[in-house]
Image (cartoon, rainbow, N blue to C red; front, side, top):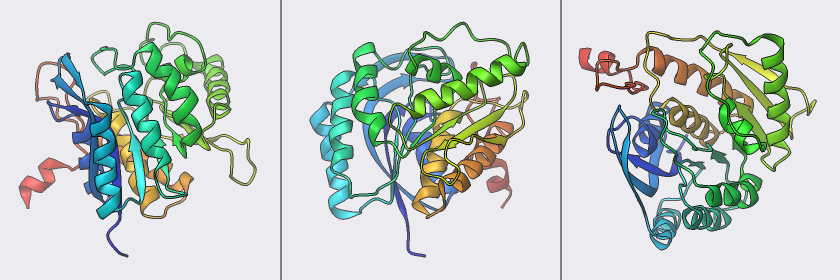
Length: 284
């Protein structure tokens, strides 16, 4: 197989745990060459985000066009948008992709530290102009609630509550966000009592059937960058020609392993995931 490429359109994390940095590590873990179009520069570490600088929209477009005109792209992952001008630039860039290029959209709204990363105007552009272009949308529970029109309530402790009511809500939200335009939705399970991803593909045989993708919780791991890693692994798998369901299963497995190996000793806050298995690499 020739070298496959995946383009990450996302923000930069100076702490190296999330955003573009996580995307490139996930692409490399899958054997895919990663390219980037940076939408924002964040001053960020494990404890939080202290500053955000939006990249001018014309520079975002220029980055995408530079990659498309020379290297090409087999799949795209969209992450942090931040502002409406940025979101519009990304929507325009997606319109310039070759036909049938898979696009994975991770609706980044809030950082692991709690920092808001998507303003209200940008959310409208996301819903109206980007979601209809998405091959796969990968919201967590809170993001799905926000996209479906409700404010995300205070986070429940993992393992508390849950049960049939939470499962019914999660399935309802999965169907609701699919109706907003993406061809497929993977509702991730990290913010739910049960760590089960819900997969719903509008184009699959038996469309309308939700597939549960089981996973384990890793309370002794570290999760900063887990959402970015999950969506980027999924995009890389699509670049390799995997089906959407195969890609979602691999993304769940690799993201879970990256959390389990997470680098808790780094920083004072939520440590970054370790998708590359740095300990193994040091031992070679």
